[in-house]
Image (cartoon, rainbow over the protein chains, first blue to last red):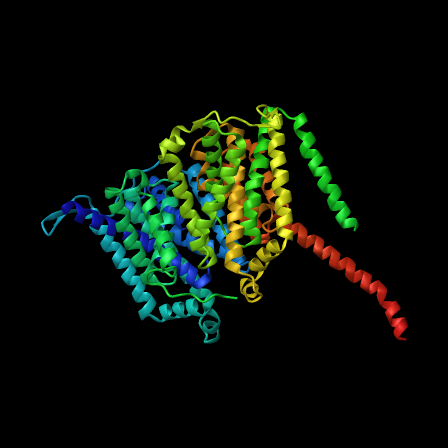
Length: 291
Length: 331
C-alpha cells in the first residue's frame, strides 16, 4: 500500500510536469494553429541554459533566472518572429514540419556545443522524505507537484480573471472578431508564445533533476506532452492538466507493474484507445472542420 | 509538345546515367547509390501520403523496419526473397491500414501523433521480441537473392536489382497518381470538404493513400535488408522517419520527382560534407527550415513557380503580339 501511494504521488508529480508542458503546447495550437513538434526539445534546452550559466560561476538561483530569461527570448520571442511568423501563411502542415526540423537543430546543437553526456542537475526541492498518513513520501515528488499546481492555478487565474487573459481567450476563440472589437491580436499571440516559453522553462527546472540534462530527453518529454494534450483534449487547459496527470500516473504504475521493456508502450496504447473511442479527448470539445 | 519531348529526353538521360554511372564507381560508391534507390522508394511512398493526400506520417521509418525484418526473418529461415518481399508489402500495408483507421477519423494532425507513437512502439518490438528479431544483436547474414538465375551477391548486380525495383515502383505510382484514385488523392489535399461534397469518400481514399505509402516503406525495407546484409533495431528509430519526411519536403512534396531529388540530397550530401561531422545535421535542419519558409513545396516548388511565371509571361507576350490583328479586325 505504501508502495502504491508512493507510486501514485511520484506519478502525479511527473504528470504535473507533463501537464505544464502540455498546456503550453495547447496554448500555441489554440492561438496560432502551431503544432510544436519541438516542444520536447523546448523542455530540454532551458536546463542547458541554466547549466551553462552555472559554469560561468553564477549561483544556482541566478542561473535559473538567466535560464528563464534566455528561454523567453529564444523559445518565445525568437521562435515566433523567426520561424512561426513567416511560416503561418503556408498553413498548419508546413509549420509542423518546420518545427520537426527545429527539434533536430536544437538537439544536435546541444550535442555539438555542450556535450553528448547526461549531466546531473540540482533540484529546487530538497531531497528526503516526509510523513503523509504514516507513509514516508518523497519530498521531491511533493515539491514538484506543489510548484506545478501553483503554476497552473496562477495561469488559470491569469486567463480567467484578468483583462489580458480574456483578450487572449478571445484571440484563441475567434481572432477575426477579436481584432474587430479592438483586441491587439498579434500581441496576444506573442504573449502565448512567451507563456509557453515560461512553462517549458519551469518544466525543465522541475523535470531535469529526475531525468538528467541530456540532449535527447526531449524526445520522451515531447511525446509525453503530445499524448497528455490529446488524451485530455487539445483545446482545453484543464484537458491538458487531466491528460498530464493521468499519463504520469499510468506511466509510473506501468513502470512498476508492466515489464520494464514495454513500460514505454503503455502511454502509446492509452493514446490509441483515446483516439479510437473519444477523439476529442477526455475533456475536449469537438472542433469544427475548417474549409 | 516540345516540352513533353524535353521531359522525355531528360528522363531517358537520367535513366541512362543511373545505369552507366556505377560502372565508374568503387564498391562504396555503388553501395551509396543503392541506398539512394532504396530510400527513394520509401520517400515515394511517403510522398503519396504527404504530398498527394496531405497527411503527415512519422512512421515511414518504422515501415522500412517492418519490411526489413520481414525479409531478414524469412530469408534467413530459408524462404526465397520473393516470399519475403510479398510479406513485407502485405504486412506494412495491413499495419498502415489498421494504424490510419482510427487516426483518420479525426483531424489531420492526429495521424502525425499516432504515427509518432507507433514509431516508438515498433522500435520497442524490434528491440524486445528477441525470439523473432534477435533483439539488439540483430539478424546477421541476410542473403542477397538470385533473380532469373543471376546471383546479386556482388554490389553491381544488387544495385541493378534496387534500380529495377525503383523503376517498377516509379511506374506503378506514376500510373496511380494519374488514375482516378490519384486524382481523388489530390482533391483531398487541395480541399477535403469540396472533395467530400463531390462524392469522394475522403476517409477511404486518405486511408488508402496512407496504406499504399506505408506498403512502399515496407518494400524499401525489403531491399534495405539484403543491401546492408544485417538488420538490427537502431536504423529504424524516429530519426529515419524524420529523415524520410525531410527528403520529401526538400525535394518537393506533391511532385513526382520530389522524392528522387530529396533522397539524392539526403543520401549523397552527408558523404560530401563528411568534414562537417556533427554540424552537418544542424546545417541540414536549418536549411530545411529556410527552404520551408521560402517554399513549402520544396526545391521543385521553386522551379515550378519559376517555369509557370515564364510560361505566363510568354503567353501574355503572345497575346500582346496578337492584339493588333484583333483590333484591325474590329476596325
